[in-house]
Image 1 (cartoon, rainbow, N blue to C red):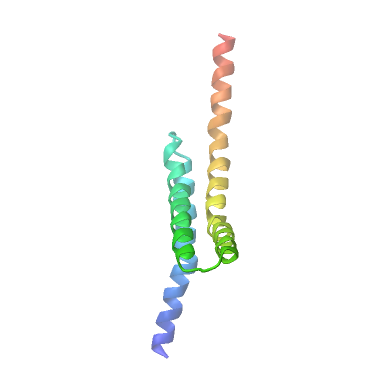
Image 2 (image 1 turned 90 degrees about the vertical axis):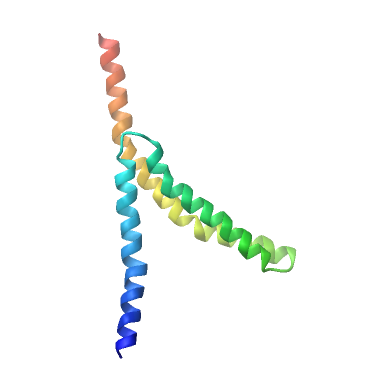
Length: 109
């Protein structure tokens, strides 16, 4: 009984706390003044997805299996990348508006 409770707790941490922590970290990094920190997590996720594709392709046989594996793995593993990029662009909207306002003020002078 006790080991199943430990397993449930570990799974809860893995499937709930880690993604929520990654989202909070992405929001924090995206709101920084520099653009580069907000692209770190999507970039890491993209690298992991490409490495996963390479590992999966090494274990398959025929050409059709390889193509299906590549497409399905890229699609599945890049969903978090797209979500992180969406968070990045939503958070960066504030800085785009601010820079447009600064340009307008400079032109008014």
